[in-house]
Length: 189
Image (cartoon, rainbow, N blue to C red; front, side, top):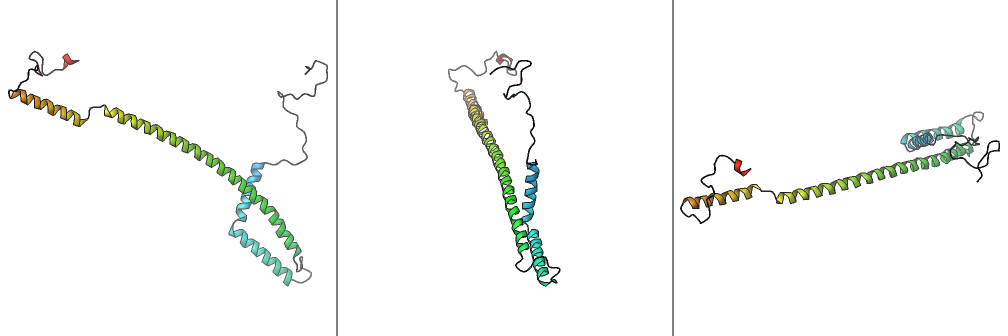
């Protein structure tokens, strides 16, 4: 690739560091999000009883008018070709709008499902973490002196003191030597 030199015509190479020149478009531009919202609104309305009632009223009025009105005021004679065309046109637009609304709903459902899956993963991770913490606490509590253990140790000491008081002294040394001060625990620190 040759580099451009001053005075030479620009090469046909695409420059990525500069914005592209906008070309005129043949098709009109539209906002897909706004069109999607409109299609959802139309699809939501078509799926209601109100739409069915209005559609039925329009068709009945159309048929009754074109049968009972004077010949000069009728716009659609008996086979009702114009009514058939109008209903076909309405159906040809309704079906794609409903499909577009369903696709948008499927996309939203997919996003919600992904968010729910991530939330479930976080909940599972939190639960596993808490389970490990509880197990560690239980293991730590196994090494802690419980009230029952301290009570049994104190009862053993009281029993030993009673035995010594009653003259059944062992050759072991006394629990409280005569030189120790009994009210303070400073020598133990």
